[in-house]
Length: 131
Image 1 (tube, rainbow, N blue to C red):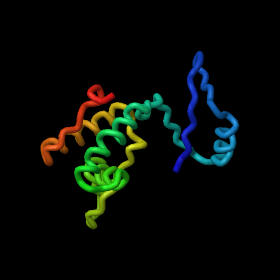
Image 2 (cartoon, rainbow, N blue to C red):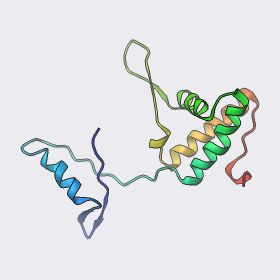
Image 3 (cartoon, rainbow, N blue to C red):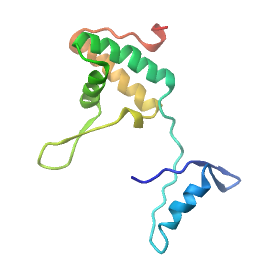
């Protein structure tokens, strides 16, 4: 896995959060062709989103299905974050909720809430309905 170096741009210059770590990594590419990707940092899901997901969405569905919270979390990832691997074996790759940004996480939880209601008649309150 490729490391991610974070920082900001100030007056057209790159200011890294950990320049020493970057320089060590950079040295490993001496005399090699490289590819550099620069993008705006995406916000990861918030603490409130995480609390709502685990404390409301997962908890209600785990109770309904008779699963532990972790079992329910795994089942939801399989159901909503799986993609078929491009081969003839039919294997699936299960995504990670930790890699979802705030907007993607809202979409993920909204799909689960809709699915729970349509498939099982299970009502999961919206975040603003829980205190």
